[in-house]
Amino acid sequence: MPPHYLDGEAHAHTERPRRHREPGEPLRIGVGGPVGSGKTALVAALCRQLRDDLSLAVLTNDIYTTEDADFLRRHAVLPDQRIAAVQTGGCPHTAIRDDITANLDAIDDLIAGNDRLDLILVESGGDNLTATFSSGLVDVQIFVVDVAGGDKVPRKGGPGVTYSDLLVVNKTDLAPLVGADLDVMRGDAANVRGDRPTVLVSLTQDPAATPVLAWVREQLCVPTS
Amino acid sequence: MTNLSTLLTLADSRLPIGGHVHSGGVEEAVTSGLVVDLVTLRAYLRRRIRIQGLVTASVAAAVHTGVLSISEADGETDARTPAPAARLASRAQGRGLARLARRVWPDHDWHLLGTTPHLAVAAGAVGAVSGLNPDQTALSMVYTTMTGSATAAQRLLALDPGDVAALTFELAPLCDQTAAEAGKELADLSDPLLDVLAQRHIQRERPLFVS
Image 1 (cartoon, rainbow over the protein chains, first blue to last red):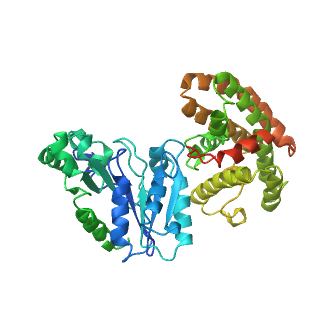
Image 2 (tube, helix red, strand yellow):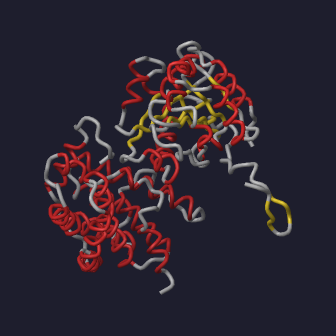
Image 3 (cartoon, one colour):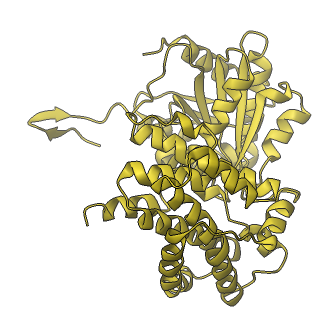
């Protein structure tokens, strides 16, 4: 949006609304994106990398109840009491954006049931390109797309691609197989995102999700307001 | 009537109290083949309004007027809600309303309500604090009992939204009449069907709704 005027002052929307995070409150990071883009695999990777250094928990928002939470439990990325799931009535975007009550209740329960959490990863159910997290639910958010979804996705934009705090283009190893041009995706993302970062990863080649992990660690160092 | 907008706001399905993840038994009714179309949905909604709507609205109105204290109303609601799953669903929704109430009216002392009140109990307390009259509190309770289930059925059966809207207009007089009745005295009904549906719902694999 170009700068416009409010009470005679130039006014540009460079900053999105942010939740007020109290000192001592765990950082909440949202992980959203279309179905099959690799959100749960990314969350699992982050848990494996961070669980020895941090106290963390995961909250999933499934279309079909506990599918993603069950995946995380089966793969034992975290103890059971650190994983919670909310049901979304078939509307994952409603539960993370329009009425976040069920998620807030689940976060309260995770905080009450675990000692001093540093980080809560809130995973959205797979949804469409317009689904983003409310600033009342998370402090920052990651939007995950994959190259197999087509290299036009970053150009099409949408709130997740444009305004997420980190855009992850996943499954880069598949690019030659699906005819996706990674430079086009990188360039289109930069065009719509301004100075918001984008990283390209392949979780099969880089199971630690190194660039995402580095970004998450940076967020953990940002002092509370 | 200056508080009409407050009533509309409280009865709006967009009110962020977590109601959208509850179907009021409709999901299990659909899964069981009891609600399959508009005709069966009408029958289901009438039953919801006449029993669940009446009972919860009468509890809410009694809390609003002070006829029942919060703790008495909690016990009375438990007594009218034998299925453990239905009690949990009621408290999950009451938790959402109590959360919002603390946010909207931070100066009011909500501690008696606790964190997980029954929905009807929370609705009675919120109705009084928000400036509604008891009949409006009852109407809000009856109306949202209907719309929560109607919206869920619309999603689950892919019904024409215009048809479902027409049905809710058709049932509006029944909502009014039920709310007026609820304002008079505490209703002593319970519905075995709704209890069975609530209990079966939580045993299903992969439901979309919490209840």
